[in-house]
Amino acid sequence: MPLNLTLASRNLFHDRLRFVATTIGIVFSVVLVMVQMGLYLGFGRMVTTVIAHTSADLWVMRHGTKCFEDPSLLSANKQTRVAATTGVAEAIPLVIGFSGWILPSGEITPVFVVGSDLQTLKPWNVTEGTVQALSTPGAVAVDRSYFERLGVSGIGSKANIRGLPVSVAAVTDGIRSFTTTPYVFSDLSQARAYIGIPSTMASYFLVKLRPGADLEHVRHDLQASLPDSEVLTPAEFRERSRSYWLFGTGAGTALFAGAILGIIVGMVIVAQTLYSSTKDHLDEFATLRAMGSSNGYIYSVIIYQALLNAVIGFGLATLIGFAVVEFTRSGALPVLITPMLILAILVLTVVMCIAAALAAIFRVVRIDPVMAFTR
Amino acid sequence: MSDFIVEAKGVTKVLGRGAAQVHALKDINLSLRGGELTVLMGPSGSGKTTLLSILGCILTPTSGTVRVCGRATQGADAEALAKLRRDHVGFVFQSYHLFPTLTAAENIQLALDIRGAHGEDARAKSRDALEKVGLAHKAASYPQELSGGEQQRVAIARAIVSNPSAIFADEPTAVLDTRNGQAIMSILAEIAKDPAHGVLVVTHDSRMTSLADRVIHIEDGRLVRHERGSADAAKMQTITRAGRRS
Image 1 (tube, helix red, strand yellow):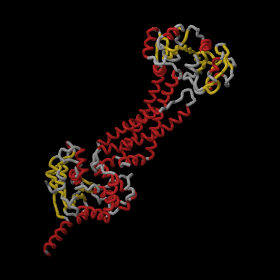
Image 2 (image 1 turned 135 degrees about the vertical axis):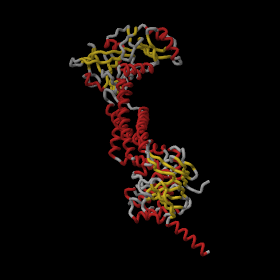
Image 3 (image 1 turned 90 degrees about the vertical axis):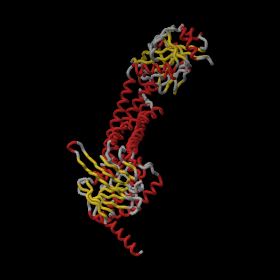
Image 4 (image 1 turned 180 degrees about the vertical axis):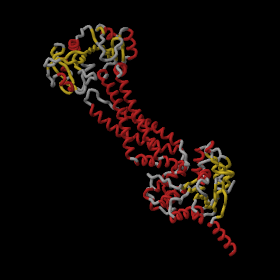
C-alpha cells in the first residue's frame, strides 16, 4: 500500500468517533440518494410496465394522449385504415379504463381494466390458470397482491364489474399499479363492456409490422393518413408516459429534490469532518511540508481520506439499499436499484467526498512549514 | 562553483509590517561545509530559528543571498523551495514531529515516499537508517511506545535517510536529559564526519559544543562570534602530532 494511503487510512481510523460520525453521515446521504433515485426508477418502470409488456411495433393513439392511462378514445373505423397501410401486418384494438369492481359483500372498489386480443398484450407472470381461459365469457385475470382488496381468493372466485358477472380465470404475481388501482385483464369485447366503451371506439391500436417493413416509413404513412392521431414507437410512448407521471405531476421533481438534499447533507458532513480532521493534523502536514513534501503529496493524503470515507460509506449504504429493495419488492412502489444506478451513485459519492475535501485542501494550502519549528 | 554546501551572504530578514516590524536577521554571512558539525548558539529571540529556516530553504531572506548546493533560493516560490528541501535538506525538530499513526520504520520511509522512493528499496533504506541510530529493533514501534531519546533518534534517521547534503537540527536535545542529549549529539557528530554531509545544530546548551567543529554565536539577529569547537581543535591536534611524527 502506498505510504500516503497508509497515512490517510491511519489518520482516518485513529479517531474512531469521528470516523463513525462521518460514516453515518455518508451512509445516510447515500441511502437517501439511492432510495430517492431507486423510487424514481421504480416509479418510471411501474408507470410503463404495461407498454413494456406489449409486443407492438407501433402505438396509434389520439393526438395529445399524455400517458397509457389517458382515457382518450379513437374511432374504431380507423382500424381498417391502419390495417390497410403498406407494411402493416395487424392493427389490434386495445381498450383501457377505470371501472367499479363489486365485491360479493356489495362493496365497490375501483379497478383499471385492460382488454385486448390476449396475444399482443396479455397478462404476464401468470401463476395460476391460463391466459387462454380469459377467452371464456366473464373470465378475468387479477394480481395476487390485490386479492384482499377485490375480495377474491383465487381461481373461480366471483364478483361483478359494472353489474356484469366476472370469474377469476388467471392469477398473476407482481403486476402492480402505481395508482394502487388493481389491473383487471380480459379480452377486448368484455373489457369494452366492463368500461362502457362502445364497439365503435378503442383506446389504442397496436400495430404489428410485416417482416422487412421499414418502421419509420410505415409510421410516416400512418401519421399522414391519421391526422388527428399520433403514432409512437413503444420507447417513445414509454418515455411520454414516464415524463407525464414523473414531471407532469411533480413526483419526479420531488424525488430529485430529495436526492439533491441527500447530496448536500453528505457533502456538508464529509466537508466538516475532513476539515476538522485536517485541522487536527496540521502539525503533521506542516512537518511534511518542512520535510520538502510537495503540496500534491499532502493533497493526496487528504483525498485518499475522502476516498476511503466514500468507499466505506458507499459499501454500507449499498447493503442498506439492497435491504430496502427487498423490503419494498412487493410494496405499492418498489425501489429499483440497477447496476447503472449503483455505478452512478458510486461516482457521485466519490465526487461528493472529493468536493468536500476541497475545504480541507484550501486550509492546507495556507500551511506554513515554519510551524514545524514553533510547535 | 562553491565548495560550500550552504552559503549565506549579507542575509537580512524583516518579519512583520509597520509598527510590528522586526529585523530578525542583520547582514548574516555564513557557510556550511561538508564533514563539519556547526553549532549555532544564542539566547531566545536572537534569530536562531529564523536563520535555520532561511538556510533550510523554508523562508527566503528579505535581502542577501542563500545558495544550497549551488542553487540560489532567491525568488523561489513555495513549491521550488520545497523541492530544494527535498533534494538537499534534512531536518531534525525539537519536538521530533514523528507521525503518531506510523511506526518508526514508516516514519522514516515517509521521508523517502515524499521524494518518490517506494517499495522494497525504501524499506531497506529505512532499516539501514534505523540501524545507524541503533534502533533497528524498534522498527515496528509506534512513537508513543518510544522514549524521548529514541524518538529523536528516529527523527534523525528520518532526516538522513534520503542522504541530504545539509542536515539542520533545531534544539534536538532541548527536551532530553543529559545522557540522551549527549547520545543524540554523538550521532549528529558521527553523521558530520562524512564529507557529504554538513550538519548545523541550533542549541542553547553549551555542553553540546564539545563535539562541534565550529561554534557560532548569534545575538539580536547578528553573528557576534565564530569559534573553533573542541572537536575541530582535537582534529587539529591530531593533524599536528601526525605532522611532527612524520
